[in-house]
Length: 51
Image (tube, rainbow, N blue to C red; front, top):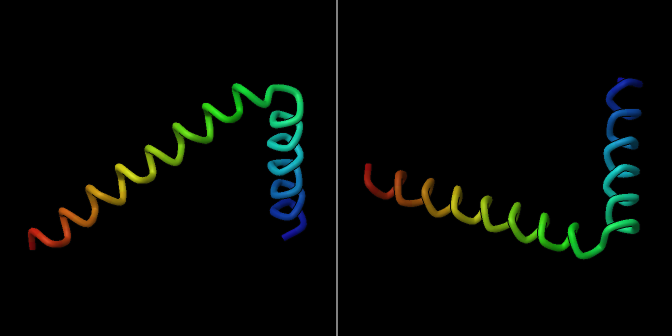
C-alpha cells in the first residue's frame, strides 16, 4: 500500500514538472492522449452496439 501511494505521488510530481517545464509539449501530449481515449471509447461503443 505504501509503494502504491509513493508511486501515485511520483506520477503526479513528474506530470506536474513536465507541465511546468514544457507546457507546449505537455498540451500536445494531453490532447493526443484524450484523442486516443475518445477513439477507444467510440470503438468500444460501436462494438457493444453491434452485439
